[in-house]
Amino acid sequence: MATVADVTVRTGRRSELGLLGLAVAVAVLARGLVDYHADFLELDELALYAAAWCGTALVIHLAIRRWAPFADPVLVPAVLALNGIGLAMIRRIDFAYANRGRDTDFGQVQEVWTLLGIVLALLVILLLRDYRLLRRFTYTAGVLGLIGLLLPLVPGLGKEINGAKIWISVLGRSLQPAEFAKIAFVVFFAGFLVTNRDTLALAGPKVLGMRFPRPRDMGPLALVWVAAMLVQIYERDLGTSLLLFGIFVAMLYVATERLSWVLVGLGMFGFGAVLAGTLFSHVQVRYTAWLHALDREVYSSGTSEQLVRGLFGMANGGLFGTGLGEGRPDLVPYAESDFIVASLGEELGLTGLMAILTLYVIIVQRAMRTAIGTRHGFGKLLAAGLGFAIALQVFIVVGGVTRVIPLTGLTTPFLAYGGSSMLANWMIIGLLLRLSDQARRPEEVAA
Image 1 (cartoon, rainbow, N blue to C red):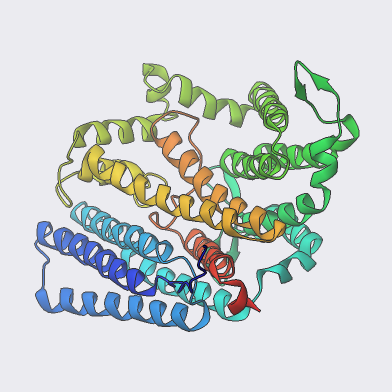
Image 2: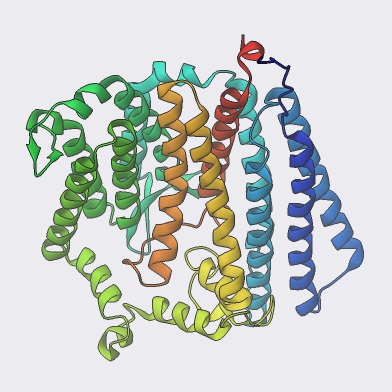
């Protein structure tokens, strides 16, 4: 005879508190090692830094316990660990620059951006009590995403840095609107695909046992492809182009479960990338630096100098690294932002870099787990899209630094110096916390 027993659903908040303690320990230990090797270690200052981290972690924990009690308990600790490692590495690079007579305060500025990002994530949890409200703004989000991509092209507002037109000037600071546009596009893609997925999944001819889309259903994919190509050509931003198109194709596959969409999407992007590399010189320069980085002529021209220095820096780190504060990351241009992965690879080695990548895998896995547990189709696509956004951005950055794909100007989430990236990615974490809270909340509590 079957017996029905009451089951107590665990929120996971105690587990989260323990994991937050480990994340804080990692952040403080990394900071201590950096200061020690720079002969700048002051125990009072380190204790104050540790107290600030403990207070921040406790505030986040209490806020989640109050406003999203069933949220995933692993997400925030993993992010804080990455954030702490990034802050320590940026501070270490400040010390390295100072030894060469260049005074920078990247570490202190990044601490401010981190606090603002955390506040933004908590505001998302507080103000967005039901993620399904976002579906009402499907097309509004699409328009806002397009506006964000186009802002750097506005005369007087846009700024060109290192050949890329992806920045705007706001109150004397540089802002990269594409970081926020990716969130808007994920909301748009999720809303559009949940409405049209039946047509996209079931209609179309079969070729070799695989169902391909009808030409008239290719409109959304073609539109996003055109937008991605325009970003690559006119803003000279291969990274954002690849990121946005990759997110859409990945979400399209999740919505339809048809491999043919992925094959068509990859074919379209491959054709567009080859065409752009043939017709436009600035795209061709990126490809040349990727394919012929070690050629004497290419290196001497400066085209691949940054990439090659990063590769040699990681090679110098070997398996276990030189140790925090014992390498020479300052020899690589933009070591605090574009090439922070190379800096970490040198001082933490392959082992440390793999540990960092494992933290990203955990974040993405929890996002996908949230997508599986969400009862609403829009929520499934939204959680999967946000997870793919982080995964693809990490792949694009790490792939570029290690010469797997052409080098891009994207930043490594939560690690690299940059306010736009920090704010946008903490917003993503806030959305994932809200999604996971509603996904893990029992039916009777949700009612």
